[in-house]
Every structure is written in C-alpha cells, then in structure tokens.
Image (cartoon, rainbow over all chains, first blue to last red; front, top):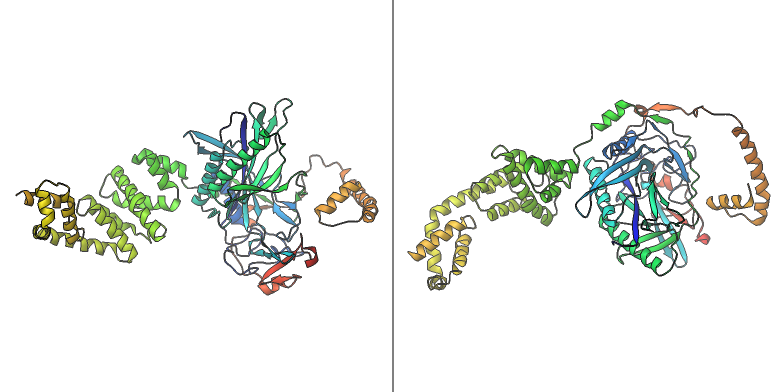
Length: 503
Length: 98
C-alpha cells in the first residue's frame, strides 16, 4: 500500500452499543438479540406524540468513562440535539444525538505501528446518541418492502470519531482493535462486530504528497492543489475487514486517478465475500440534517464528584497491564500481549499466578502460568469451545497439577491430558491427579516387571537394537509408556531399558 | 425563501410538491419566516439560553421495565407481517410506492 506519489488519509467513525440494561431515553430493555420483534418497545422509542425522553444515567456514565480512558476532555454540561432525517428505522423523524457539544473531545490513544513504533491516534470527539430500528429488505414479485423491528430503536450508542491522522489500513485496524479492547475491559460494551454491537466506518482519501497539511484537525490543500474527495465505507463486519476494505479502497482510488478519472465523494459498501467495496451512493449534496437543540431534555450538569466517581471504574488497561507483565515478570512481549488481549484471560492468569506464587518466586510462577495458559488451557478452550475462567477450568486444582508436574511427579503430556480429561468428563482434577500419582507409584514399583515384559514381548525390536539400530529404543519406550498408561517417566524408562538390554 | 429552498426542504421531508404548490407555498413560507425573524431583532448578547439545568444525579437509573405488548405496538401500523411493521417505499408508504 506504500505509494510514492500519494499519502493515505483515514478518519474512523466507530459506533459502540453500550451494555446498559435499559434504553437511552426510556426504560425498555436493551438485550434484543433473538427476541420476538417489537416486544421491547414503548411510546418513547416508538416516537408516539407526547412521549418524553429521559436520559439513562448509566449510559452517560459509560460514555464519560470511555472519554476518560481515551484521554479526552469531559464537558461540564451535556446538551442533546436532534438530527433530522426521514426513514422508517427512525420513527420520530429525528435521532437524538449531540452536535456542537459532544460529552468528550480532543483525546488520543497510542497504538503500535507496523514497524513496532508507537503511534498516537487523535480522537476528535465521543458523543452519546441512540440506535435506530432494525430493518430487513425483501421483495415479492415486483413489490419491494421492508420489515421493521423497533426493539433496537433507542439502545444507547456511543460514537467515537477519530482525527484524520490515521495514515494506513494497518493503523486503522490497530486503532479499532484498541478501542474494542478498551470498551471490553471497562465493561462498556461487548463490542461484538458480528452482532452489530460495534460498527466501523472509515473515511478514506488519497492526496498527493507534499500538497496538503493537517491544520486544527482538518485536511487543507497547500497552494492551488485541489483535494481529492473521500469515500466512506460501510457494512464492515469484522476488525480484519477494516484493514482489507481500506486497502481495497486505496488501490481503487489510485488506479482511478492514474487512469485519468476524477474521483467523486461517495459512500461504498464492503462486500466480504467478493473482497471489494461496492458503490452505494454519491454524496454530491452534503447531508442536511437540520440539527437543533433537543427541547425535551434539560441541560445536564456534570460535577467533579461525578467525574471522580466514574474514574474509579477505570481499571488497568491492556497496554499498562502488558508493560507491567514484561517489567515485573520478565514475560516476553508476545506472551504479555496474548495474556492481556482479553480481560477474562488476564484475570485468569493473575489468579493462577497468585496460587502458584505460594510455592515459587513470582517470575517462575508467572512463566509457568503463562506457559500453561498459552499452551494447554488455550488448546482445551479452543477444542471444547469454552471460555477461559475459574468455573470452566478451575484454577486451584490446575495449580496443584502444575506443581506436581514441576516436581517431575508426572510428565507434561500426562498432566495436560489429565486436565483435558477432567474438563471433558467434568471430573474433579484433584481426584484424577491423585489417581495418576497412585498409578505412578504402583508402576514405579512395577516398572522393572513391565520392562522385562516389554523386552520379552518385542523380540524383533530387541534384536534390532542389539544389532545397532539405536532408534528402536524409542519404540520400546513407547511400549512401556503404553503399559503404564503414560504415568512412567519416559527418560527413566529409557535408561532402565538400555541398562537391561546392554546388561 | 425561494422556490429552490422550498423544493429542497420538501425533498428532505419526503413531500412531493407540484409546480403550482411550489408557487403557492413559497410566498406563504416567506411570511412565516418573516414573522419568526422578528425574534432575531432582539439583542441577546451575553444572555444564556433559558433552558433548565438538572444535576447528573437526577437522571434515570438504569432499570428496565416491561414495555408495550407486540399487539399494542402494531396497532397503529398500516401494514404488518409476522410481528414486524411492514413498509413500502421510502417512508411508511403503500404497496404502490414500492
């Protein structure tokens, strides 16, 4: 995507559905996924005459919390505005949003760029608004119609507008990823893009190098250069599609310009199956939303005690956590990012670490916890499709399993298969561990007998080994392991076998 | 207010006006706007909008309540199907506008 002639300029608009229990301006329930259509609707979200909106305190707290987490200035007053347009998904004829005074403005977050360096992405504003209804489009013969479900109408929606200082598809993807991580860490939203709880809409343009400048958050031409218009891409269903859609769009714009065509300002839709953006509509006339102050909602005053209370919900964010893991536990950067990418996983790691710390120094405990989580626990959670938490994969027995493994009581393979067995068969891991240790004890008493048996039963392999085929030893060790159901120490078995065979 | 502005506003409101209607309504709209302009002649410099302020704590707590039944919600819908509101055309139109 690096191009010698053009700079890529991207601004990203992200919408996040807050995970409140009730809607933004009425008490209807929010969780509409797989609910019967039009069963969570009242006169307010239906826009019936005379219905009055009353803002949800929690929703505004979550918006402020996101602003604090992204280094924004928080306004002292909250003003709502009406944004007018006519469409069946918006029964009032306007959306309650914020225009001139967003709750949060002028923030920033850091991302790691493709070259490994830190890059700061500016945040223009974060404001509070409401979601619209869900419409699905159908046709019957020549008749086209839409079916509308108002359950989604009025769900709190936070809009985050970046400054246009994103300069590559990679940066845009990292930024979206970071925002998702933050809102999940702070329990602001589940931010599942497939369910529409998070939506990303990039604005993209390409400009000739050296012919534009970024001034007061705006892209301005230098001299008599004429800026190329931007395109906005909608319908992006995943974080990776953010990157792909931008890459496609940049290539498309470059080839249009290079073949002598003029670009037009337009809205395009991302088609994930075809891997391309498709023209939806041109934006020759600027949107005319006829914003006006919302007369039905009072001005809401935010006091410093409110900000203080909300700030207390600010937990250690992934970036800080990652750096702490690297610094305090000497974990690798890679392991630290994997362990902090999801709040539940980092919680699990910290709990496991705590239980292991009673037996090991913290660096060793961290290393062990990290190895076990990124290895066995990830693979089990992946295979069995279960979330990683103390209920699904109990920490206390896992910790004693790890300790036995460390004392070389049992092999790593055996330990991992015990863990898997306990979860698959829902059996107490401590019981399985006890049984395995008992088996091992009996086996070690019997190991001589087992080795003799194996030697007797495998004449061919024994004579092969004696005539110099060293590799056969592996097969014989395997036989011993099978007879002891994996509880013998393979190294010890190997030594004993060699001793017996050479003796 | 000229005819073009009125046409634009009609389009935004998804109302179609005939040429005759445009001719008729333009001067009427003009009169309405002129009366409203009277308000602009008042000097409001340094005066804050008289909108009521409320403290943050007065906002609604996030507690969900039972809403209308589906039957009630659909009572005013001209067309419906399987619990959904059915619409044709760009707003709440009829089948012939599809």
